[in-house]
Image 1 (cartoon, rainbow, N blue to C red):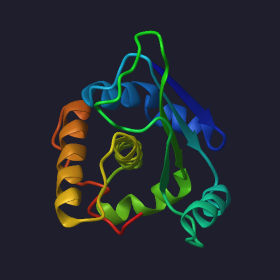
Image 2 (image 1 turned 90 degrees about the horizontal axis):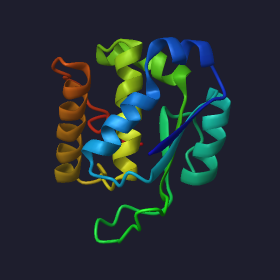
Image 3 (image 1 turned 30 degrees about the horizontal axis):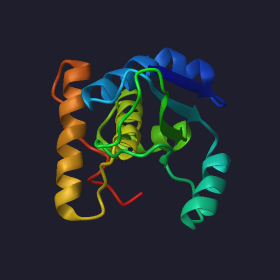
Image 4 (image 1 turned 90 degrees about the vertical axis):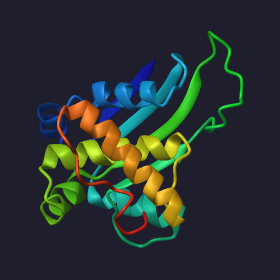
Length: 163
């Protein structure tokens, strides 16, 4: 498994806050993706994520996390043992995450872990457009983060305003 972490912004803060690669591996393994899975996570400025949000979602404001799928999440799609499975890319704005963490009663580290998990679950096929989908995604986020942190995790990203 290859997780590429791009610290385009706030590298020192992000490295000190959370083992991003470990969390990503944890989520991807728990979702049953192949050992050849590749994904990237990038930390960017509010301006950079604003531009991406405008370009790809036609939403003219910064957001906390965006996910861009590559090879898809079709569990029936065969993956050869030596063939890379490109799950996709996640882009996160740490400043947005840090500003909203207190609103949800989370530490910055927990908010970042939630956004990473949320983004990866989108790449694995989860969504929250319909209520039943949102409930399923929220439950999965809480379950994964409770396992990762070793303590109950009470919030989820899917129960917030649609991304």
